[in-house]
Length: 93
Image 1 (cartoon, rainbow, N blue to C red):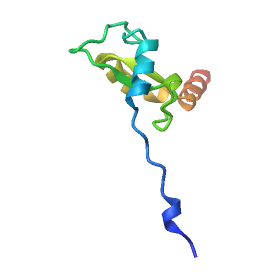
Image 2 (image 1 turned 30 degrees about the vertical axis):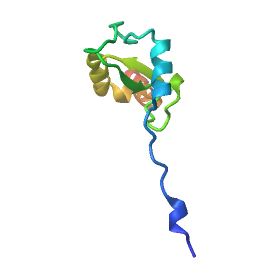
Image 3 (image 1 turned 30 degrees about the horizontal axis):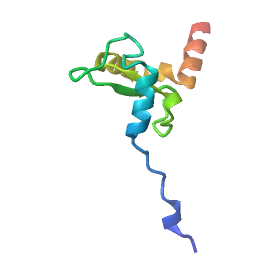
């Protein structure tokens, strides 16, 4: 018999406060694209560099302002490895 309870999918963990703090300290509390300083009005957003929402290591996260974070949505395909490969192939063809 199969045990279906053991086959549960791993849930995507939220980015905890300690990881956010580590990323913000590394970024010197500024957006890592435009260098806008974070404060009460300008809150940080966190972007996954490799595109995997499961990979919440500080090394895989960038602190971004709202404007820069929203700009990454259009270029999300280009940010991951397969998107870069696809872009290179299109340039060659």
